[in-house]
Length: 136
Ligand code: ZN
Image 1 (tube, rainbow, N blue to C red):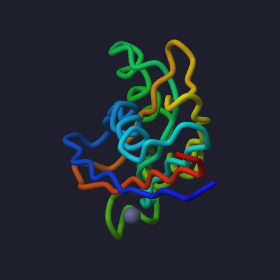
Image 2: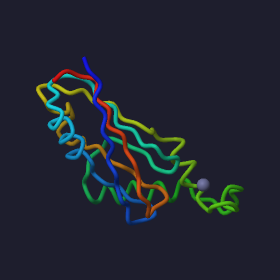
Image 3: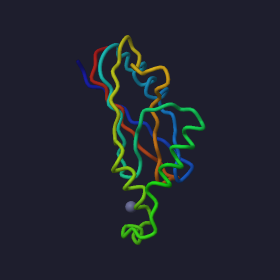
Image 4: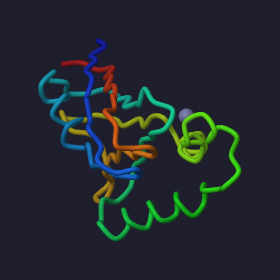
């Protein structure tokens, strides 16, 4: 087993935005010629998260609506500093990472599963680390 690491840079365009990064992660596994292993994908930020779900456009809108409705409040203390408390809180209750197995050079995902980067305080430039413990 060897450790392979690569960084993905993402430019987000909206305050809350979901981006499917599955093919970028799969490309990294292909470039490193990894056949078997485990992939850790994680964000280096406090106002963005990674989730695994279906990338259907209506569902992506519904997730955005849910985040907005659930985490917005008019009286957060942190909003006095940089007006993004809701984004920090939403990120605290999601994951900063996803873990996916690799078999036969492919990410092991269910039919509808995609790796989604959830921006909570865009637009920004985001860094996502893809680290694979595997063999090539
Ligand atoms: Zn902040």
